[in-house]
Amino acid sequence: MRALANRKSSVLEEAAVDMAPLIDMTFLLLIFFLVNTNFIKETGIDVKRPQAAAGEEKKGDLILIGISEAGTVHISGKRLDLSAVRPTVSQMRLKLPDAPVVVVADESARMSLVVRVIDECKLAGAEEISIATKTEGA
Image (cartoon, rainbow, N blue to C red; front, side, top):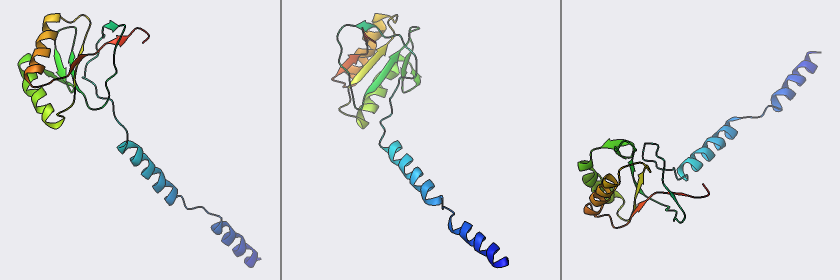
């Protein structure tokens, strides 16, 4: 009888599946997808973009500058004074020299502030500056 009990327990031990390699493989796949994912960069504020009939989608590395309805300027989630836009954009252009600048301004933002921000970007050496809009279908 003991021989039969020992045989059953050895059969149960043989049927066990080792989960460690499966867990290792899952973590390797997770790391692979995280490394190869392009995360969407945001300005750090919510804006209501103006609507446009025609537009061009920018891809790749971008320098995003947000302008809120209240007139605050944000880059990479940090609120900046207008005088800090030029040095910040210059510093970002050192890391991303060919990156276009995209101004994401609220449709109710003062146009004079938007123009001043674009001027500061040009003085910082940015050659390609765009204004973010939403298309009619979006």
